[in-house]
Amino acid sequence: MKYPYKKLFVLFVFLFSVPLAADVSYDCFFTDNTLRVDYFQTGTASQEIISLDQIYREGEWPGTRSNLIDTLNLGQYLLKVYDLATNQLIFSHGYASIFGEWQTTDEAISGTFRTMHGTVRLPFPKRSVQLIIAKRNKKNVFINQFSTTIDPGSRFVNCEQKSFPYKINALISNGAPKNKVDLLIMGDGYTKKDLKKFHRDVKRYTDDLFRVSPFKERAKDFNVRTIDVISKDSGIDEPRKNQWKQTALGTSYNSLDLARYILSLSNKEIHDIAAMVPYDNIYILVNSPRYGGGGIFNCMATCYSGSEKGQPDWWSDYVFVHEFGHVFAGLADEYYTSDVAYNDLYPPDVEPWEPNITTLTNKEHLKWAALITPGTSIPTPWEKTRYDSLLSAAKQLDKKAADYDEKDKMLHQQAQAILDSPKYQGIVGCFEGAGYASQGIYRPAIDCRMFSKSLEGFCPVCRNAIERMINFQVN
Image (cartoon, rainbow, N blue to C red):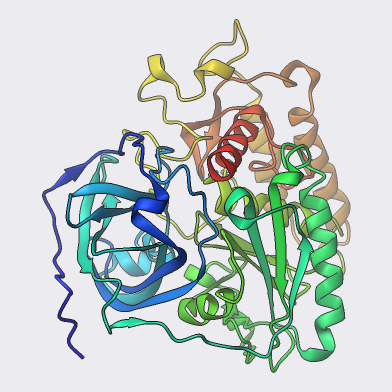
């Protein structure tokens, strides 16, 4: 099918910096509906082509109607929307994608081509717009990758009102979507018989989320809705075990070939169902006891529903809040001792866009300079050598030995004792070891929900980033 309004092109040389805030009148440019644009990303580690799939008109726009230009400078990608008649920037939105992460994997680096599906959403325009997707290059500069013009009155805008036999539940209601952060939680791998369990799981994890600062203090700024998505099978795919399940949302372990990473490539199906309600962020609970989860900024978050025998029961509580930090506030992983699928995700000579890690390439203008504890050395000394040696010793233990559990527990307790040392508590500095790298990348605090597998709260820098995002969305 040909799209007469479409002008598709890839731009490789046009540089773009984050837009300055502009006084854009929502009522002048937009209706109350949502415009959804689905697209394909195809390529390898060094190549990327974005092509249009489908454009939809959906229900109520849930986002802010005041802060239409995204000035937070977060995300690997940036959606920009211009009024075609005046060339005025009227909307922008930062985000990340599964494809963007996949490009750093061995498979992508080897030259294998993959295609993945993506979605961007914006308020439904009253007249024709130019939509541009830009991506950060290796120097963190946004470069336009894709552009198309959209006539909102075109017959090629799909206005079908899809329906699904799933129940909607308003778990937490604090006001109109345009004035709140709207979190949507759906389940995958829950059969009809499992729905009571899904409701218990949702209650448990939302209670966990709103017990942690700053979500605790800002709970009134959130709405939480659930959709009772029903799968044919209980559980989700576990490729390394040759275990395959027929589920509604297509989640799977072993995403990007990392055993514990849970994502879904069924993007269209997820967004079709999600359109039943207003939402800003999508969280998928998977009906599995096996440890795992995932979170990609303004894309999706996932979390397993409970712990296997032999695992601490609170691990899933940790995962749920940790992954929401990724999807909601763009927080980076601060840990560096666990296996990951990425290769050089953070180049040492480039400052990461994430608000809670730094390469110290611009020490005089450190992104969290205002929160540094007075008198703290930058970088900040800590017992890193001993901490690393303890965790290394734990990895080398013989798991078949009779005393494995005892020794493993002892070594991890000794490592945690370093993080709990009073001499580091309350200090904001630059502690080396973050972003999957032992050297050259720094985190703000000795410990944080984004660093250790514990029920530690968010550090001051992460709390500040979360507050900033809440303020941006509700004002």
